[in-house]
Image 1 (cartoon, rainbow, N blue to C red):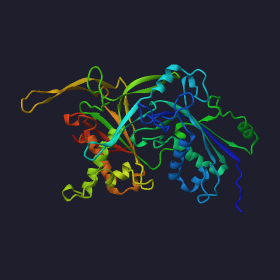
Image 2 (cartoon, rainbow, N blue to C red; image 1 turned 30 degrees about the horizontal axis):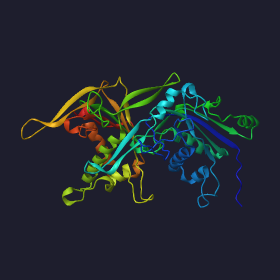
Image 3 (cartoon, rainbow, N blue to C red; image 1 turned 135 degrees about the horizontal axis):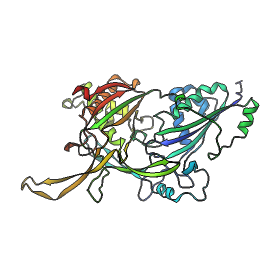
Image 4 (spheres, helix red, strand yellow; image 1 turned 135 degrees about the vertical axis):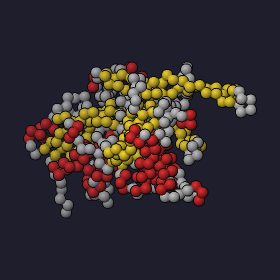
Length: 458
């Protein structure tokens, strides 16, 4: 007969998270204007369901300790004894002005904030083929939650003191760069940064802890008397390789919004971000370099180098691109005909944002198509574009790769050669690259170690 476990301890933690990038946790609904809408609470503010948080926590935890995962998160009789989850994860609600959390029904929410979150920005996406053109039926858009939006959530683990190491792992997972929520996490969405965390372990065999646990108020808006965790106490990321590119544009660059304004026919992508200033939410428009644009260019260059390293050349029809390329599917994932064949990507790239003091979008280029026969301008072929130039000289682009060392050596080499091409100025990024835009040079580092420095080679 199996020995019954006595749950003598309760592990409690509360987190305040900030969306370091835009986030899309879908509700499964659509509207006339948008193909996919985000999950919202009863007050109309975005929220993250506890099931979403628990699913991501479980996936990351299984990388660390698959044997005990079914004990912590529950499982079937084939996996464990069929018991339920010992971990309880609460829904994350948005933090409003003055630290108020959107928990329960708020009688009179701030109309200015509510209006912004009732009209969330959307991102358009289009699937590009290996020929560099849009795939049929490959255009869609989805709502996103503003970068900078803050949430609060809580988790509780019951058991005995033997679960202390598992609890530390769960706490650490939330603080890692690979802890991302919702869809599009490989396209720059969903990274949450821990601003504050509080935790306490209750030993229910001790009278003081037992009474304190019974008196605990679970409301997010209640006064919390837990000890605040120090950031240095949290474990750093495991199984993650961090590449940092310190980039300096040679001239100008443009990551287009797809339409223009009253000054130009085409302009850089701009989005509103949420800023918490003196416990009050403010909104600011910033210029964006979307991670999906970086990812697409990087994937094509990785395919090129992997084919080159393995002598897969076009003249013998051995070269492969897209998901058919081993390096691309290993690093960036593939769809697959079934769930078992599908594979999530290992590469995480964040959207990069520039405030008005860091970037200038006031330079306009005028273009006209020339008739080769007459040498004159073609009718209707005059257009203008607004481009971006940095006031600050450089910026950092972070690329995180999960379990890179488990892949074959040629895949890792192909990725690093592709990243090297970016800092060498050989892989332009963004739009109008054939006109000289989007050329960057700089320094490539891997886990703090310098791999290439353009300034030292020129």
